[in-house]
Image (cartoon, rainbow, N blue to C red; front, side):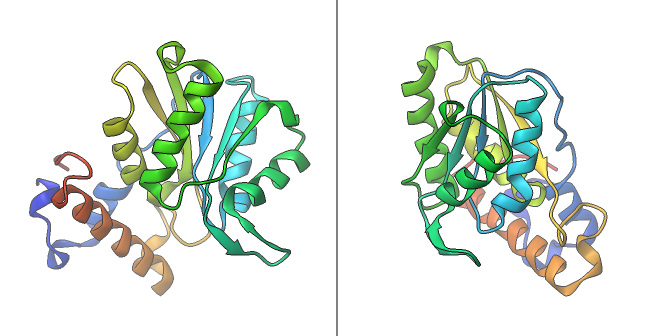
Length: 201
């Protein structure tokens, strides 16, 4: 089934599972840089995945994306600034953290990360990056990145499970079902609006 043909009525558990989760696996290979997309829960779920990859020696730089100003339990700050503090707490040296503090959406996360990659490495020297975001958000993020990044850069998914929207549990709670369905419709909308190319599931 082509994603552009999917309607809300088509969104069975099987279709949502294929659309959001099928084939989303971190290969574990070394990369040039780790890119973490921002959200209000990114410090809790995404940052540990990124730091684990960093500590395993897969890369020595982490880009934290997200300029949206949010109210967190401990402060009001941008998503990237909030992640930055957590990454430091987990032992990553400041010199190896790149703060991308302007983007306001997933598309802008990707575009602004490209600028930071250019400044830190030169894009022609970057061969592979690890893209870290919530598992249910990965398909759309990966598709956007692969569409917007130069063709020579390989993008490896770094899925981060949360409490409500894991592949095996999203259908068990109203919050999980609502979030998964909304993300599935976001993907369909991105295809129909030309943000990402159409694809089959």
